[in-house]
Image (cartoon, rainbow, N blue to C red; front, side):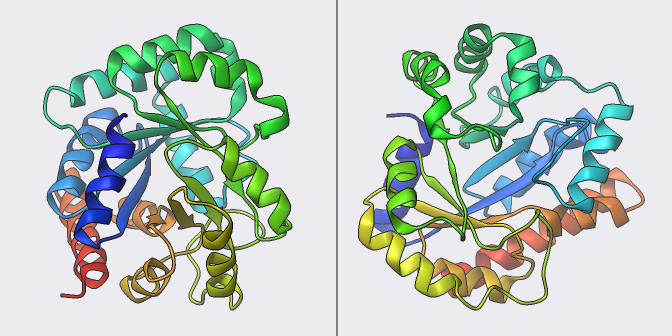
Length: 266
C-alpha cells in the first residue's frame, strides 16, 4: 500500500473526500514549486499532482499550455522534477503524482523512470496519452516499483469501457468531467452527477473528478458524488496572475484553503 492508497483509506474512515491539486512543475520556477507543494498541503490539499512540462500537451487547455511553456523556457526537465520530489520527501509525506505525456517517459526509459520514481518518492503516475490496451509494458515496471497508474476515463466513454479502465487503474480512477481540454469553467457539465453515480456503481476503486472545476462551490458539489476533486487550471491562473513568489504562495494558499473548507462543510 503506497501513500495514495493510505490517504484515500484515511479520508474514507473520516467521511471526507480528497482535495487533489495540480500545478506544473517549474512554473514559474522549481523553488516556487517546492514551496507551493508545502503551502498547499498546509492549507488542506490531500494529494498533489505535478505536471511534467511538454511541448505538445494535447489534453491541456491554454492555461496549462502556457504554464508548460514557462517551465520549458526555464529548461525544466523530467530529471529535475524527480530531484524536486526527492527534496520534498525530506519535508512532507503528502502523496505525489506525476502527470506526464508518454514521450518524456520513453526518452527517460520506462524502467529507469519507474525505478527513479520509487527511489525519489513519487507515488503514482498519470499518462494522458496511454490507454490500458497499450500499457502492459509500463504497468509491469510500475507494479514492480509499487507505483500507482491512474488512467483517465472520458465522459464520452460507455460504462463498459469505463469499467475496463477502472480495472486497470491503481490509486484512483481519474474521471474527466467534460469533453475537450483542461481549463477552468464557470459551469459544470450538467451530466456529471449522473455519470459519477453510475461509475461508483461499477467500481469500488476511488473515483476522482477533474477538468473544469474552478471554485469551492463546484468542488463541494462534485465531492458529494466522488471520492476526490482535482483542481488545476484555476490554481495555475492564480500563479500566472501573481507578480511575486510571495503573492503566488498567498493567493494559491488562500484558494486551496477555501476549497478545503467548502469540501469539509465548514
